Length: 202
Ligand code: GRF
Image: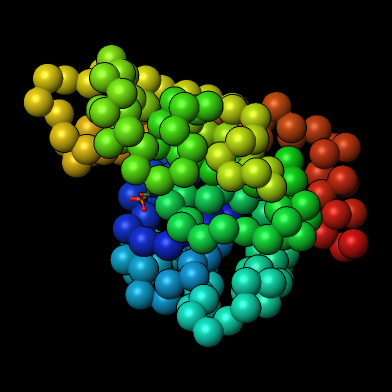
């Protein structure tokens, strides 16, 4: 399957997906890394690895215009699936609708717990035994789409939001490639691909 990745920053999940895609037997390849931040360190990494990149600063650009430009860049890369990986902007309903069912995100909590930001601090404040991460389908409501995979991470005495975030990040790097691979494998029937082509043409 052809996979495009959308990032805003560091891109460590992007790197995990990219290296996983280069393992023998991988069922997906990375065809584009896109960003709303031309300075994103992850873009430079993708470039060094020979992966096509696209970026447009969102600053001073209306959200619907930005999403339209992103949609066009993605469409040109003909991805079967789009993986948001640390993409820190809200998407317009129109964009989500066009990519629905092919748009995945990784979120640093055990959904449905702690949608939104500051997930690790909130888990610590609640006295939870575990944090973790979830890969889910993107729907209009933020962090609310169907959960495709989760990995719990034990909270240790003395953990801070930063120390927990670091360990959850390691778990994310395992969870995202495995979940994406399972998802695209499940949907790799001819009908699915035809529906995508129709959706992109619409
Ligand atoms: C990850 O923790 C992800 O769950 C969250 O943003 C972070 C992105 O990190 N949405 P990176 O850019 O992949 O290193």
